[in-house]
Length: 405
Ligand SMILES: [Ca+2]
Image 1 (spheres, rainbow, N blue to C red):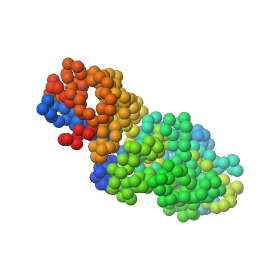
Image 2: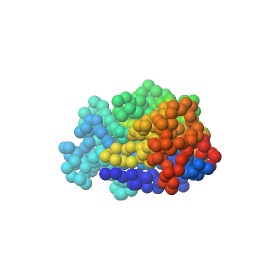
Image 3: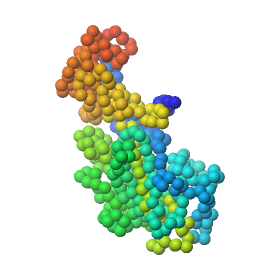
Image 4: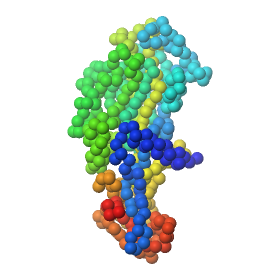
């Protein structure tokens, strides 16, 4: 089944929300891949760098737990609260819907009362660590556009690591370490996102911001701060996105930093609420997550403005004569010059860097170059022509020519 319209509409709605809530108007650029116009020779397409709007990416992921049987309720178990070991009315039973806490409850719509959440079995095997990996897989490259926010319904973990993969889970790199005591847990000096500068943006830090304090009941979230990192280039209110886009364009490491195919939450030690673990009541210690937020967009190399969810998989709807899940190569018969990603520069329309038909002949350094089309030589251009005048000769053009419009 195909849901292209759904995704486009949802992306559109989110973009409206974002534009009104957080972002200046400049955020919405790069939403068109091409537009048509006219020259003396007839109708023509003008090509521009384009990208899909950001969307809630948790609708398109697969979640894996390790160990796989770590979810509570099989066999049924009763849990006590951290604050009061005698208050034990939290029952988990995988066979009863109202009492089950399966992983999908981390991604359902919150707003109902009471909250729905995934919950692990308790720390029965103490002092053996209660380690759980939660892997979120998209099977597609995603560019993060907003903070990752994980909401815990019991205490936040005393130790955890957020990791990312860029190669579909083959290799992993840490994004951020979280601990009540960074030195003790990871032999790292505690830092916060405020310690990060433009020059240290790629540094991986350990933070105590989201772990400690017995006031945990009022503060349930663990965050990976994407927007604070964006703000190092775009300014505190992200007014200067052009500056960020310029940096992303010229710095591959920076671009890759915000790009993922998978995320992994490694829960290493649950909240204990005290320095000593109460060995007589281990059913106080477990993990419970009610919500995970991941906002981003399909990475389409600036060659698509929409992304479809088809056969449980996200795929860019490639323009500019490109193809592949990320529009990462030129279509057959469009290989007159080497494939190249689109560029955010020059601001605000960027450069499309389209793939050119073989019949154009080899083109060297043809970025933004205007090429006269000869219909007898370039039949492949037909599917890119405006429908108004299908027989007229057209002109193919890179993004720089858009400035002339
Ligand atoms: Ca939930």
